[in-house]
Length: 163
Image (cartoon, rainbow, N blue to C red; front, side, top):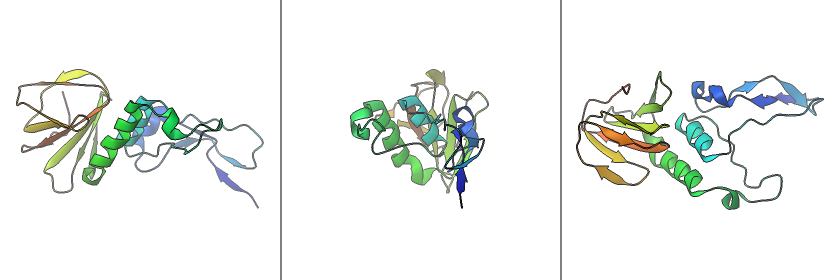
């Protein structure tokens, strides 16, 4: 008896996932053809996968024997810290047409969490805090958002999209 699984993972389309990975193709184990792991291991890819609450490859040891804490950078660790700080408030996801961020609202509708993927300037309502740095931002008409940083909005009607 054999079991099966995806033979490769489709990272460019991971944004459609929620608590799962998306695979292309199918193979049985043992397989007759090589597996292709397309899971992102760079900090930006890890941040992007976690931001969409999609599964993210985090081995404790890599095939060459290196440990994850020897391979991961400060940016990897920040991505994981942001996710853990936000995950309990990630109830409803709003995908953004431009793909530059994803917005999550908490269950009560009192907090929005923005996982931001590109450096840009946007208008945000209410109180804004950079979860990545822990700094509250002074009230402004617009904010310079940093790539791969997470922002929290409270005290206002929560945005569903960013312009």
